[in-house]
Length: 511
Image 1 (tube, rainbow, N blue to C red):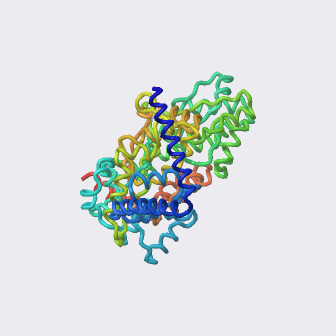
Image 2 (image 1 turned 135 degrees about the vertical axis):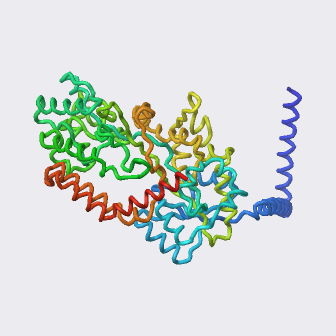
Image 3 (image 1 turned 180 degrees about the vertical axis):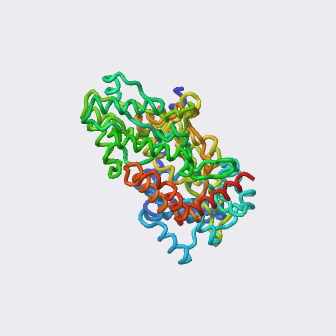
């Protein structure tokens, strides 16, 4: 060991003497050395350029992602390094993105990849903007095809041909319940209700014992927890092989009759038609209301706000109510198409664009690009529980979602939970609601349905018409005997076309 240390010291001294000698020789010696170094550096750069000469710079137009420095994020730099492609992202604005997109496309701007909302993708497919990708995926998209299910691809194909890479919502999850004041239930010796009779009895007792309190506040005539008691889980269920709107089922009139009863008896907030989301939250956390619509996204800060105003205040959750036969259900959030990444037909880099997206889904790259480095930005507990290491996760991968062009559907739903657990209260609320996922979840008949033309034309105005009319039924402004007239208006205001269109899509998927 002493001999090795002596040798190292001798080498260091020799190097120091040589450097001093070189300095004493003046600029000519340094110039010669610099010239040699520059020559070597140039050769290295030339070799690097040669190895990447077949990889062009790619231009990507993507939808708006708030507070993301899209071309300078840590994930961006890792994407460039791992894929070997130099890429430049362009982001649509938050306001009127469709208008900007139209200007870009009609103006002849060519991007290699367009990552867009499903409705924009569908419109551009019909305009012939996208390249057909089936053959390219077969040769350059092995990881894409291994990661994304046939079911997902089927939702975005046109005439059986593939024009994009689908990205579904990360993980179907139950995101709705009712929050109720557990301290009040304890005071009045009431159980947390599990069926309609129990729910009504709870509200009635609260009204009798606490006349100044609103038993149930809401901002919407619909609530999936109460709808469950009427076997109304899916807004567009399948009945005898056909898709129908649940407003045409006889149970909907029963639901509205029940809600009207709550309203008439003062059990439902008299101001529900004017309430906003923030309004009902304020009523609940200030102690003015005993129950309200709730969900895991609302869990952050709500218990603390309640206890600040009502120190003894505690929250329990009411899950979907059983119907008269003991059945229960709710359609989870997340059975939807999130975005689609396609390649412009005019792009000179179609194969490279697919290869770039494929490289991000390579198993050697995917976990790193979405979560970072295990032990540094995230950890795995109990086999498949991904948890963030804060604050490094947010620093390194807080914006990783913006760089996805589809994900590995077999593993990413579990990986995505690392993002939820950045706030432990959010993670705990998510877990509480979804511990009983298998007991309550009902997959919708039109899962992952893309936007369809008639829907884009009518659905916004039709939904507003339904909400306004149902509110009037509940408040007694419209009598229930006019329900059939309402259905006729619904049909004539686009409902008939939407139903026809959705049935055609459903039957096509069933083939």
